[in-house]
Amino acid sequence: MRQYVRCAKWLVRSGNLWILLTFAAVTHNAAVGLAATAYAECVDDAVVGAPTTLATPPAVRLSTGVTFVFRVEPVRNWQLLKVTMLLHVAGGPVPAAVDVGPAKPAATQDKGEGWFAVELPLGVARKLVSEAGSRLTVRARESSATIHTRESHTYSPYLVIDGASSPK
Image (cartoon, rainbow, N blue to C red; front, side, top):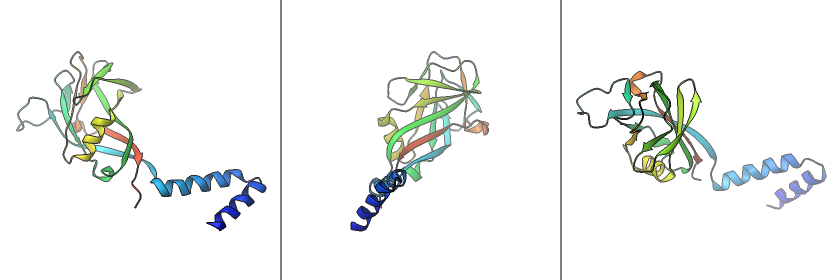
């Protein structure tokens, strides 16, 4: 530890403060876990209320609702900071808000070219990540929009997960 203190003093005296700050950030991240971003693909979906024997169509009306399962195993032990779901509109306007799971309606953010983002409440996100095979229900009761499902391939829903990996 004494070596690091001497190195830090030399860096401050020599005017290389940015190197010291970079060093401090790296050693701090090593102690508490590394901040990272992961992308989770949709691996299963179903129309709400439809028989499980029916294949999910490439686009579903948001007023009907759809459930999604995402591949979140790699981030199962992360400390979640923010989880954003991205969906693509197949037809109609981008909804102002959508229901995600049992939480209150979440506001949407138009990302352009048909994509919109929904920031998931952390309670919903933690449940989705911690329970294997957990389904996320998405619905906008008063929307005329249709969204693409996993079966559309090109516009499949996905999650952007910001968090910190647990230290080993």
